[in-house]
Length: 366
Image (cartoon, rainbow, N blue to C red):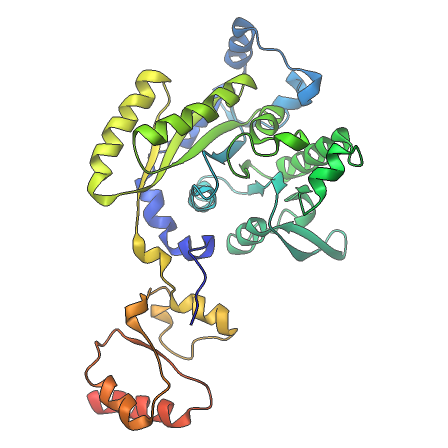
């Protein structure tokens, strides 16, 4: 039997664990004095260019006032490479933000892998990035319609059409801007998940750093485990953020080897503060069992529901823990009595003898 590789859904139950590892004081790190921001822009010589659709009014329109003349910026998540763990970090942050704010908005400005969903506003089926459906359905973000959560999708052939001039750059950026306008209007805070590293989308004029600059968002970078290699990858992305005038709020390092956890946390945190003055917001250890299927995954695979044992839905099983039953009832029962009790047996639905035999053995052991 073949199982899918670890997906974002498989990390749902680890969100609480991850959130416990993140030292992220949202109000303090993410809220800024608007006057200080513009003074900093002036002193650094930064201007809001029409090319990135930035102006002081358009940028600050996405900031939410939290009191005491302080504003909550949108939060933008980008990785240092593909599969760095952006969606896992986004899951944890949305979970945490919902404990602080009434309505959390989510948007993926530029998506690639898409699914078809029904838009209530448009009363028709549209395409959205697959991570959007995960966030909206799991966290019940129904105050935002699918229409606004995934404004730009890049399917096969899109890049060629853009380069050929069939897709105007202004139309694309206007679509992203309109989506942000709506999500920001109906939400107390907005979390944006990028696609890949900060430069992804550059060929169509919509890379993560540029979009973050357009809405005045703070950037959080997600890097893979390690020290030197992780810092090098972070530096490449930080420079692009600096080019567009995007403030780097912090770094989350993911999949850190458990035996290197304390070392990585100490030295990377020290290096980030010494070099850039940026905090290490989270250090997430690598858990190999997350790559193994859970009963919840089998529910989705077989399109069914557990009849009993729902408390074990998120229990993971390695390949050695699983046994596909293709033998006779006699051989199955002999194996059942010598195999470890945490073995997962998979049987065809027509094998009534196996099912009844398994239940009988359970009753015998009671």
